[in-house]
Length: 324
Image (cartoon, rainbow, N blue to C red):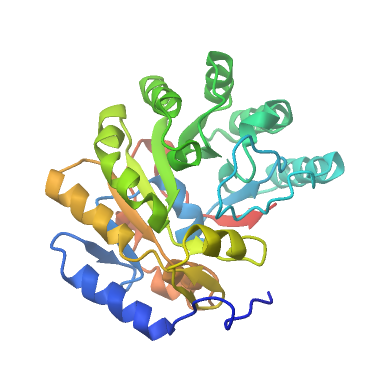
């Protein structure tokens, strides 16, 4: 990745880490797990296992069905070229790979659909959903399947299909629609239908006030987990971010990030002060470094009790997740 640090407001990594550490230490109730790499409140959603416990039991995969999205976030990590689609041949190869592994003595955990808006590809998803049901039947297991969505295109038929395919966790991105009432209604419907409703948001400073003002709504519609991801920077999104947030500070770890300016910890403090029941995870640049470092499994020793127990399928499924 070629990004000129002279063109943008890049600051020292240790300066940012010091600011983060000081703020975390000032808030009573924040929890540290995984040798201090997992900063959270309450027990986090099982859907996080794929990142935090990659070397454990279970085979899983994050599957990209296509690039189309009906919304456009300035910090989008999937690129702005929505015409570059995943080919049907690639998806058929993924299906064949999963089926082959299902015939062998492979332990399965669950699968995730991400990138673009997956629900715009419900027909493509059907082929995977039918295979997942077949795997569960033959192996006598229940998969923990999850979906990332902006939440705008749900219908009753889509909810029915996801339930039939045994999706367990739906991760919504409310700020993509500027915290639309339609998305909140769909989150509430998902909760009523028995899905684990989570929120996965970029810890993006321009969204600070709206995000903080919507935490009460998260509680009211039944959100169980909120994951705040530090904004990862690429060649294709850094100009949009810099134009949208000129005062933003960027810094390098293994890769560049936009500092959230304490937003994640503002949210955590608000949740603690208001005694909201959902969990919060600081999915920071440090988590990313841990996930991609050789010391990953050492850091994650003893982290099992961090994950919430939402039934048998949510227990002990942390696995070797692969990107599609």
